[in-house]
Structures are given as structure tokens and as C-alpha cells.
Length: 300
Image 1: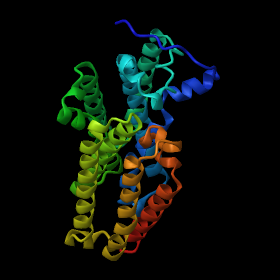
Image 2 (image 1 turned 180 degrees about the horizontal axis):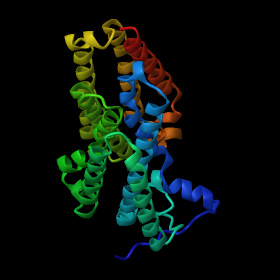
Image 3 (image 1 turned 90 degrees about the vertical axis):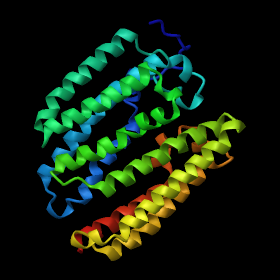
């Protein structure tokens, strides 16, 4: 398959380009692998932490394979989005042969890591499911079908969360999967809204804002129902969980403001989801929420 070659502007160290190939900002999504650790905070130990780290590395490796494939396949479409032009594949830093070899190497490395993880058989199947969904998404251009595209992109988040659950040997959390899925849907529409804003695509902005606000509202409702559920009494301090709704809601509100703001400067000019960790208000709210949830688990 012929690949359109983007002019290579500027020079960076080769080490930096290799780091960028792994999309470090997107690797922060592996926090969803660690998220179920809140459930096991009472019994967490070094072995548990190492297990979660191994699971996150495993998923990070296979997700990098997917990222490389997406950039190789969609280079002609992606070059019109300036916020992602720092990616080495789009700037043709590495040859196609080098990228293919790197993908193979990453898959081999992941196969060595997977056996050391608890419940590795199911995690291996989930990893294979993630790869299959994303390859179908790329090669069959499923993004042109709005619902299928949404499902494919969002699916990676609950898969990460479930891998964390399996790694810890915890029971399936329906509420956890529900909230993570809705949160991922909000991130999906937030990214598309921010991109439409930056491109001044007035036709799409209104519909995308409506989708973003709807998904954020559903996420908030799901969390409120979860926090007031009688099922919490066995494992959580319900008072603390109720208090956690405030920073959770404020975090969603902050994200909505960032995604739909009319400003197109600074962080808002970049890929919003890749730069959430650089927003001080969002990080502060997320830290407060995390601390409250740890207390809710420990003080039950």
C-alpha cells in the first residue's frame, strides 16, 4: 500500500522520536487498568502492584501496535489535523519496514509478559479482542459508521478496566464498567468537539456539543445512582462515596468547558484528551476524588 509522505520538518533526537512513537500521552489511558485497585486497597501488596504494572505494560504494548497501524493506514487523512502532527509516522521519521518490525517485536514482548499476570488466559483473550476490534476499525473504515466507530473507540476503556479487575481477582463490577464506558463516551465526543472547534467546523459543533453534554449527563446520573445504591454498604463507606460525587461532577464540568470552549490557544489547540494531565484544575479534582474513594474503602 502506498503511503503519502509528509515532509519531515525539523529535527529531533532519535530517542525522542522512539518515545513519541509509543504516544506517551495516550499511554496514560492505562490508568484504567489500575483503577480497580481501589476495590482491593484493603489487601494490596507488592505482588498486587507488580501484577497491575505488568498488566498495564502488556496493554501498553498491544495498544502501541494499534496506534502504529492506525497512523500507517490513515496518514493521508491525519495530516490535516495539526494537533497530531508530532507523531513520527506522520512525519516519516521511520520507514514502513521499521514500523512493521517494531510492531512484531512489541507483540513478541507482550507474549512474554502475559504469562506472569494473574488470570492471564482471560486477559490474553481481552487483549486479542482489543486488537481485533481496532484492526477491523482501521481496515474497514468503521469510523464512517458513527455508532460502530463509537463502539470501537470506546471499547478499549472497559477492556482496560476489566483487565485490572481480572488481574486483582476481583468480581465483575457492573457499575464500574458502566461508569467507565460512559466516561469513555464523553471523552470520545469531547475530542471530536474540540477538533471541530479548532477547525471552525460550525456545522458539526452544535451536534457534537449536544452529544458531549448528553454523555456527561448520563455519566453523572450513573455515578449518582452508584453512590446512593444500597449495594455499597458491604464494601464502601457510603458517606464518603456520596462526598466523592462533588469532585467527580466538577471534573466533568471542567472537561466540558475545555472541550467546548471557543478558545483555540494553548492546550485547547492540541489534542484535548492527550493533554488532560497538563490541566492543573482537572488533576487537582481527580486527586481529591481518588483520596476520598480510598477513604471510602478503608473506613468501611
